[in-house]
Length: 486
Ligand code: GLN
Image (cartoon, rainbow, N blue to C red; front, side, top):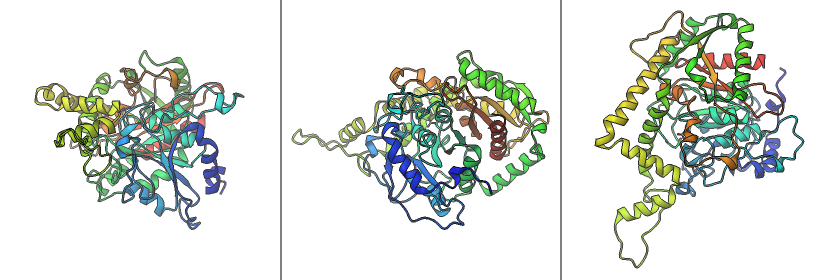
């Protein structure tokens, strides 16, 4: 078969690229010892994969980019890491990210920011002298490692957009699968009801190659989708779009995903892509998802509430950082030790989320914030169910409309990668970057960001394809169509 060159690239050449390039990108926080090559017939033979530093590995530390876990090495591999190793992949290293996945720019990291490695085809400026832009976050290291050609694919996580946003900023493909398809066992939790493991690679076929290995039931993860649910979803998807042909594809364009803040540099290529699909036979349907404007607030309430509970385990006692009480002060109280450990171990963004989440869960605020956010979450799911042609196999009502759409297409981000020296670290502005990605997270739907063709001097732009729960293959197939018109 005629495989793309990177499919046959030797492991040593990926490792060489890491040594050459990573000092200016800062994507890697650990590099593994070279491993014995896997047998040739293994599905991921000769494949170098790097994983976000929130995914546990027994041979390297797992820091979550936090001072709290700086010296933590897990005694076991996450299920996703075991599956990759069993398939013959070489896990070459661990990747920088925002602390515990909280952020959109990969600037909240104890390892320092990741620099977007995108180099425009027309640029003659040497790498070291180029403008430094954000790689996006929280999985900035994952997107940058792929974009710089340092690994075949990278694992990321995605709670509210952490795979799709950096994929868009760095010009690579990023898949957030349906919630529950890929095991989270051994993945450090941020917000359990939203967290997914994502896959990033240079193109859709490489992304699918890795996703197919990971897409399997895991009894160790209580939220892993059952084999029955997976089967039902596959059947429903096949019935809705049996031909898998572009002529039969119905694509919804959600009007709420084209806000005024959307920059022209994003809008122009997204429009061209939609026109391209239409010219090849797809039916384009304008749709409305009216609850979208509330998604961002609901996301930040729910994710922070869950995070505040998850972060409670870092108490300076069981594992991670321990800051003892100052000697000679007579302080013996355990609460003071907790406070000292957590004040030093957590960065400002994590501390902010803990406070926000704890507040949302207090008796006074619970009804107004947490319950309201959960109601919005349900409305968002219902919005999606109303527009899709495929029924929601996870819901008892199984609503679907025969004149519905197979996928939705919209910009992945409202702008291209922001310059690192101009980012506002404290304000709400960075939260706004997630406005287009959080609805699919709240609804647990598969979403794929695919880079679009732009002019040679422009920074990358991604377009997102969102499908019904369990229709990950449909979403990937539409990703292929997008690549073919590019
Ligand atoms: N940027 C969002 C946040 O800060 C999403 C992060 C993520 O998906 N891990 O919460």
